[in-house]
Length: 62
Image (cartoon, rainbow, N blue to C red; front, side):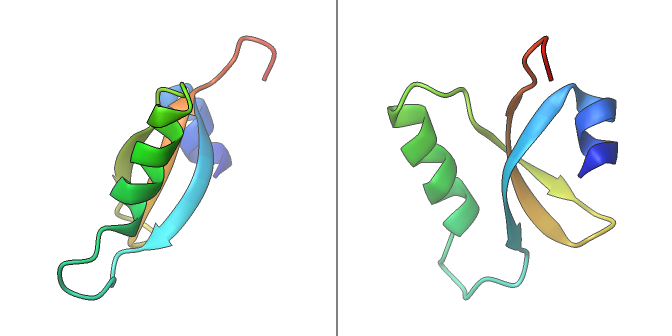
């Protein structure tokens, strides 16, 4: 997670394996819930770990 944070300037909120059942989008659903709560959550793919990450911009203090 440290690599993603430093490379993207983002904080990882949650990780989801890429092998979700067909028609299931758990990372997108989680990100949508966070956006409804006012967080600018985005889903990105971490190819190295074959997982979807839900990230938000890192705060200056992080």
